[in-house]
Each structure stands twice: as C-alpha cells, then as structure tokens.
Length: 158
Figure 1 (cartoon, one colour):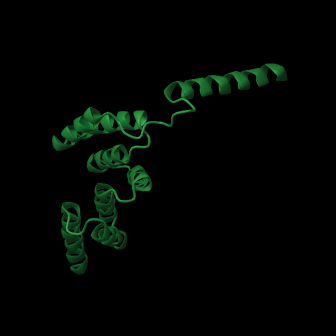
Figure 2: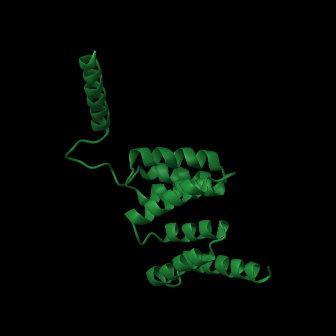
Figure 3: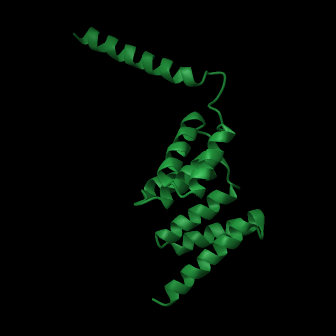
C-alpha cells in the first residue's frame, strides 16, 4: 500500500513538472513582456472603467508573462479601482512590479495612492520622494504630489 502511495506522489510530481515545463523550458525563463495588444486592451478597459474586464485581461497577461512589471501594475490598478478592493493583493502586485522594475513610475504613483486609500500618508510621501528622484517633474509625480497635498489638508482638518 505504501508503494502505491509513493508511486502516486511521484506521478503527480512528474505530471506537475511536465505541465509547468510545457509553458517554459528550462533553457528559457518565463516571458517578461506580455503581448502588447494584451496590455493595450487592458488599458482600454481601464479607460472605460470596466474594472472586471481589465482585471481579467491583466490577469491573463500575468499568466503568460509573470515577470512583467507592467502586467503586475495594471492588475493591481484594476483591483484597486474596482469595488471592494482586496488591498493585500493590490499591495502584493504593486510591490512585485517595483521588485521587477524599481524605477516603474506608474507603480510608484499607484502604490502611493493605495497607501493614501489606507491612510498611510508617510508611505505615500516616501514614494513621492522616490518619484522626485526618478523622474523629477513627470506627470506621475505631479499627480501624486496633488493627491498627497489633498490628503495632508484632509488630515489637518481632522
């Protein structure tokens, strides 16, 4: 009986390895860049504020290219902007985007906005300072500076 269990375990591991190997060979890592059309479609769904569709598209992009900072960023954004955002998942994907690309200005801006949503003004300021160093007066930093200033005013009136 123990032999049968051991054989079942070996077969399940072998099947799992074959299944994973079908997506990526040992010689080639998982793709870093998803299909550009996938990201364009995700951005279009976001522009339409179709958060459920944007999530589906970004999730599909992540499955095909788990090393894409853009896909992680768009997935987190679509989660955050939708109803009842799972903030733990939002933070996880923004942080993964930044792990993959520490200079990703969109991920810094959106992660800071997520911190503002949860009342963590100090962390939002940290990302504002990082954007200042990364891109100076870029659009993302300007928008984030305005959001941080608004949060500071709201906090001051409490």
